Amino acid sequence: MVHSQHGLHVLVCGGASDAHTWNLVCLQLLLEEAGHRVSNLGPCVPEELLARECLTRVPDAVVIGSVNGHGYQDGLRAVRRLRREPSLTAVPVALGGKLGVAGVRDAAAADALRAAGCSAVFDDGDLDAFRAWVDDLAGHGARTPATADRAARAGATADRGARSGATTDRGARTRATAGAPTGRSRA
Image (tube, rainbow, N blue to C red; front, side, top):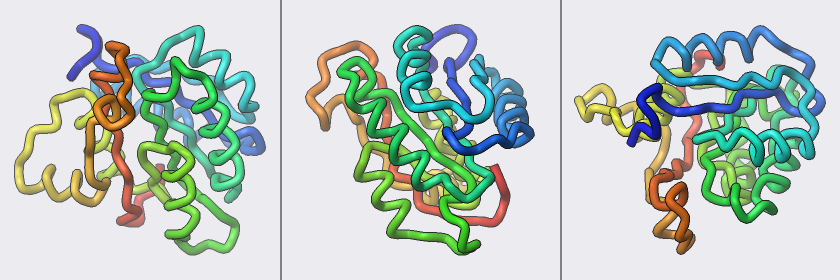
């Protein structure tokens, strides 16, 4: 479901230890090109600042990008902090990029991030799966064979509001996706 006439409001940022900016600019442009509004907080966003900005801006989704290989640690701290706020428990949070410094995908790290509250994890930045996830959140993910395949790679989608018992309008509208890492594109 599109939450406004202008698409989703997506908050984009880098993890607390990640000083890279071009990935965030690319994410912003990709989302804006798809018709969404973006608040780009930039790099090196501490967990407290992220939570405060989410409470103030009330985004439809949060996307955290990682280039430096500390996505797992930064993302785990960030999503745990967001999930401590009752009004942010149903906000979809995606983490994409490099989860670790070893240069290989880490399914256990992705699983731990999802268990902590990440709605989707795109290890090594699968842009096709990310686009399918955003389209699904926005409610205009047309189910053609190609988009159905991208959505399947992004993971199984479930209504987070129904699963968590959330009674807020946001909780009823929100979709949570457990992202399965695929592809080699970088977010």
